[in-house]
Length: 269
Image 1 (cartoon, one colour):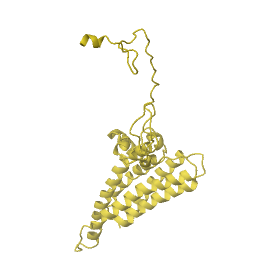
Image 2 (cartoon, one colour):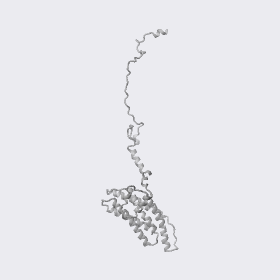
Image 3 (spheres, one colour):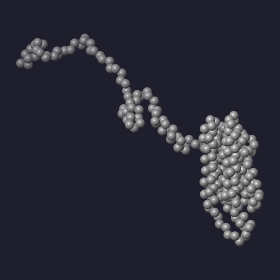
């Protein structure tokens, strides 16, 4: 019975499928078009992204790059280059600040301006005038009357910190923006370096200001202030040559002399 069923013809039936497929018949092949791969998921436009990006597109453009620049401003590593100085370099620049006639300070710091001198001289001057100012007032009172009571004035330190740090930071910034407004080339870091080292002579003169002789104190502070003012003014003149900035040079000289008089009146009265 099974063999009789197997021998029945089935090719005439509707819907019948041939049992054997012709192997000689070529099978059609279809080429799949090259896919354009894209990064997924896309960045949300509301969050500052750039949408879909192909693998070849550069990353980090637009707002992300500007954000990294702002991070550099507030990063400590961005300022390490301005402290890359050794003892010999700092001593050489300190000695140069005591020779105001040369006017070549910017040529010496052109390759490597530093902020170490600004911080070191300002901080040292603050503690020196605060301590020696109290010593000067003590000697003055003891000279006038040996029975006069005296106490250490801690307020000298607060006054010195606010005035010296404020002067050393704000004045160079003011001259920087002024020269930028006048169309002259200026460098804020070089200005900070210049004004920072210009304070060194006041550290040395403060040691002599403890002498309880008023005429000698005035002579010392006028000489120190004049030397420091000439150092700043002459170097500014050589740095911004070719421009009519006489008023700027005079202003720098007057401000430096004003600082000298301030130190004398407030700390060595």
